[in-house]
Amino acid sequence: MLYRGLKRLAFEKPSYGPFTQAEEHGRVPVIDTGIVSLLRKQHVSKKPGVARVEGELVVFEDGSRERFDALILATGYKPTASLLFPDDNAFFDERGIPRSFGGTWAAEGLYFCGFRVVGTGMLREISLEAREIADRITESTR
Image (cartoon, rainbow, N blue to C red):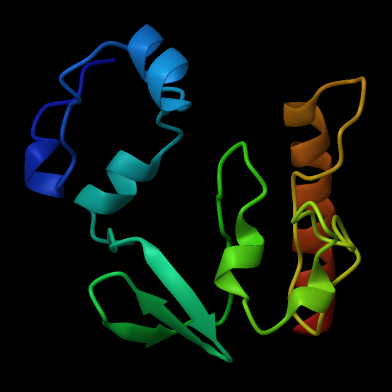
């Protein structure tokens, strides 16, 4: 499906193609699973990158701060979540991988997903972990 007006939503098309994006920049093209519609309806908003987390506040790269009830961080293919929690190194091993992930929280309300490498495939595992985390969050808010 083609999307028109993405520049209005602050999305810029790269000057290079998807293979260059993967091979030279270590990124894969994003497949829309509903976010464009949510942005257009103003149900979600696009924010700058996250610089760090300070307790219950998220500090963005532009210096703005905002409090969230829940954070879902997509850090990509390299385990870099530890950079967002510089004072909490106990959450991560020497490779920057969380010590607890999936449905087990690292701290109250803090879950990590997508770090378990399994032979059945990462996307399948991420889907299972995400559902498990969502169930735990739902249980804790009842």
